[in-house]
Amino acid sequence: MVVSMKKWLAGVALGCCAWQAHAAVDAQAVVETYADIAHAAYQDSHVTAQALDRAIDALLAQPSAQTLAAARAAWIAARVPYMQTEAYRFSNPIVDDWEGGVNAWPLDEGLIDYVDASYGTVSDANDYYVVNVIAHPELQVGGKTIDASRIDAELLRGTLHEIGGNEANVATGYHAIEFLLWGQDLNGTGPGAGNRPATDFDPANCTGGNCERRAQYLKAVSSLLLDDLQDMTQNWAPGGEARRAVQDKPANEALAGMLHGLGSLSYGELAGERMKLGLMLHDPEEEHDCFSDNTHNAHYYDQLGIRNVYTGSYRRVDGSDVSGPSLSDLVKEKDAGLDTEMRERLDASIARLQAIRERADAGEHYDQLIASGNAEGNALVQAAIDALVVQTRSIERVVSALALGAADFEGSDSLDSPEAVFQ
Image 1 (cartoon, one colour):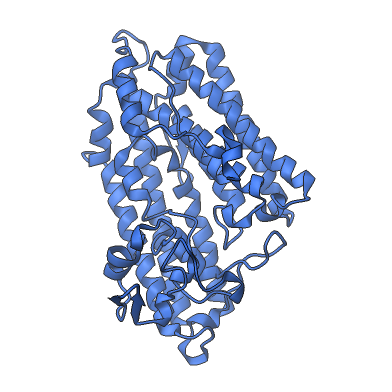
Image 2 (image 1 turned 45 degrees about the vertical axis):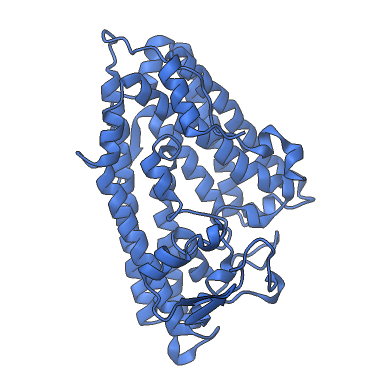
């Protein structure tokens, strides 16, 4: 069961003890490190998104296999710092409210562009399942007319994103760009990612139809991503709204929030929704970076972000480090053995997820690992899930050791009520 943020905050307020002012490690300094790492990671996300945008410009100026490959490589590079920010989602409403326009998944790609016949032509759950905005300057859905003649930020963010109240109608963010760069992955749980040709963006040699509108969409969604990441970078800069929100809380509440974010990403989101659910269903549609087959990296950098926050250290894309007083320092002061346990559990999860990355580097990607009948691959993914669950139990003990109230983390039916997944 997912614990609401209001309920969790109420538990913090009622159950937490005030942090001892005489502690050798200053809790407020730990909060400052947390904010410094957020600012650096979002800044890196913006910088790498700028590189992606430049690669997209090059692709659109001269569509070729080479410029498409460069844009894809820039997208993968842009995911590295961004995924390390996800530990900030679950206890920072400013981040959580914003994230849906930046990293929402899975998406019904027929909203955006052409799809294979196997995708189908109708969905009982989504009226916009195959409207294909790129092919239609005017949309007619349910008696409603939508002017889509100009593909810009207003159309994507103001009209199409989550249109009809359906979260699968993802029109913006990393995954919309991913779909446009790779196209559908039609390989199921077999080898291979999406294989969109560069000529889909070439009006002179157009494949897929509507190449100019496809280029407009790609440029518009890339520009939106830049704006979003710049906004969040400013939110965590000195004086920014997100930074002030954590700085202005009592220290015990801010620390509880940090750990709530770590536990929720570790358990309900990463171990549950992003890994266990797809493994149970053996469904490649449930993998995070499904068009590009980059899921092995997405999961790894999520976990690295969890470790960054606990240890108070982040390696920037330029190779420099941001570090300072940390949760680890506070725990070590209270219970050195628990801090050792926590660090070991974090490293164990890193190692399990690294094993999945190594398998991908050898040619067997995440969607293949979760395939029905792949006992060895399934076991590799399950081992990573198990490590994340064990890690979460240690995060719960950290919350208790620091006297921060109840450790109510976000859950997942795939872990908490597996039978419900098949109902």
